[in-house]
Image (cartoon, rainbow, N blue to C red; front, side, top):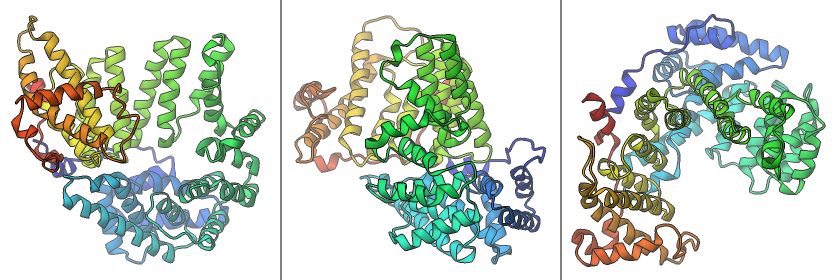
Length: 531
């Protein structure tokens, strides 16, 4: 049995040993010591210095690494800081960032799915309202404090704010560029505009022309290149942006240059010259500096290794990725995005490179991922992948409720139901193939799988059939020849023949999926490892 509160309470301060060489290191030490007075003085000093130098990079790093966090012990210190120093704009900004992180981790629409616990829906709404209120309060308290201005922009990005006033937008953007005229501010403005408008091209280009030339070692051309290629805001001018990209040599464009090379037409036909190898390695080396780059780094690693036909490149890149994520998790231990990326990397280490301990490490991480991920279907499917990694394809009986949880948290989307049905069909096929074969001692019985799948498969098949008959059905997913659809008819016939009366005779409304609380599930690998 897994107890989330126990997991939270068991966390100890796990930040890496610090030499106090950076401002973030120094603040981390004060935060972990709970020295609130010194913490407030230190950040006040940083604010003063940032205002004088018009450079908030150090302040941003402190708030992004230490307060935009899921670290329970540090969040408790922030709460104490707010209580003891209610007038501190720095404590208020820290609490604001923690509240924003909670909303980000909880997610959004999945809470409206049938069967989702209503108390979790209330928790999400409460967290969203709290973050919105703190953003407003923090902006009134310290309108020139860059982490506060950043929080307002991020709150727009995560749809906490509903205000569409261009006058207010312009005021915030101008204040941010006045306080910290740098590329980071410009990118945050572009991200906010991109999230706020369905067709943001004109607004983004206008912002680039208005603000980018105020930035040292930056200009409006660079801003447009990044806006177009990072946010795909206007495919019509993408070719112009790619051409302009080749005329610039700024290191922060390396990931875009790498993307352009790797996904160019005919890339797979290029000669694997030493020059190209060196170019790919050099560009790739400089593309893992922030958590936002993790996905692209992993994707580029796979494509480079495939092109160069060098699995060892992927292996070493995978190791570097895990090391980077570990450094971030020390400050943000229940960040479901980071944990999922690490689990994916460890699974690759086990499946592709035979690192046996990587599977154990990945499984040990899953409960941490489920602190916030338990209300999202993809995290239940991740658990299934972890359970299946060293099992026969038919050995899935104890994962069926996990697959149904994934559907329950998917808003009963057709794609999610079909995914679960396809997974069960593969298990059924494997069980039938192995039914009369000799099996190693201690292995599961395929006949048990066949019996356990009768009702869940019929339930999923009835759902797929009903969803495909609705007016809003996806014609591609419901194409008769599409995956699993050819088997739906047979499964329904078996149900009509009495394979599972409790499902075949039930009303469709009674077949909606209800989630089993994560605290109630048992981990199948825990039982295996203890034997």
